[in-house]
Image (cartoon, rainbow, N blue to C red; front, side):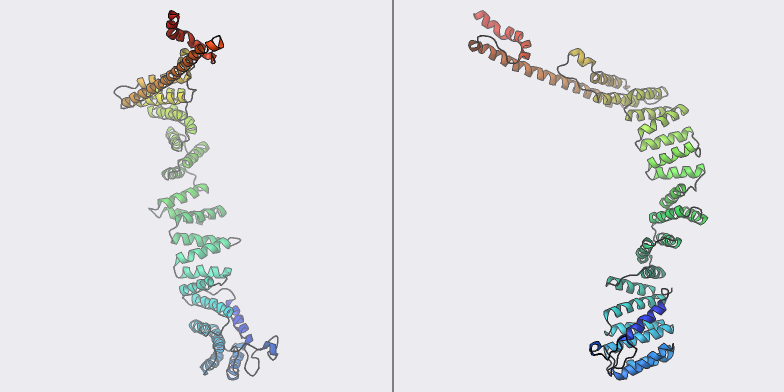
Length: 502
């Protein structure tokens, strides 16, 4: 793995620029500065300068480096490091230069050790040490130590280092080289998400990562995007086919089949039927029904009675009863089987179309369908239909109550329950329903009777008070005129004795 493009020259420039502050105690510059250190205000900080002896040696080494004679510079720099009592600043800069020489000589381990010694010296400014850590990380990655280099680069980032785009690429490459794909994935995804424009290599990388990490759903998503961008590439279709061939990975096979269908790769009835089956198997009946209906209308799947039945079943599983009805009508008419007419009746029942449901159930019974089950469903439909009607009111006449839809439909429900054969397993259920409906009707009658009794009692009290007030009013005055209908009955019951006494 290579260090990022132009890194060799960038590293050299960094190291040379770090030497711009190199000075000797005598005031002689090792390299020319924009402003001379001879000026008092530009004197280096205490402890961040070279002694005369050390500076002369380093100056010689630098001259060798400028002439690209790195082999000659190394002994000079080692000689400077061996001097007694060199300060941390001197040790840090010398090791930087030494690491640069080793780097140019392709001695990467020695270069890494020298750069690490420069940081350990404590003589570098924070920015210089930070930049050096990035270079060490690059060298580690280039020197077959990708995990160590990537870890160092991540640590540098966590400590405040700003990742450039090339560092993000370096991280996923390094972790991938170390075969630690879980560590590589976040960087690969970041590299993908920030890429603009996205190229084939970005998609190929995530496809590779998700495949190695066993993430079929995400892999399927990337492959789908790839097919949408490059639908003409046979290599992509071959890759999907290989996923189907892996064996035992049905979920992935479904994802691939789904995307192949959406991409237009499936054209045969067998392939299209497989897609429908996958959707149904993975509890997506509505999507399966959409595909089956679309392909039958397009003529790519034969519109046989079996396929119509399958479509109607998928629509009913999706609770799309209204859409299932015309399909079931076609299927039932084509096959003439009891079950299909019963299924049609049930679909009509769920849509509240009781008359049509009865017709379908009666046809089903005529073809041998369970009469008990059919009549219970007919009765339930009638009862549910009655529940939608206005309830009878207590002030209705007997004739009005009997002719009300609420009453007649409930009577029809009881009659349907009566048709359930005694031998049927639904007979007990039918008896319970009839008891419930009759009890419900009686409850209505009892409520009306209670209201009527309360009304009579209240009117009797009012009539009695009116008679009592005749002494003062001089005549019979009833406040609630609606109670006059009860006066004759009151008089017959309570006033006859008064008349006899008079």
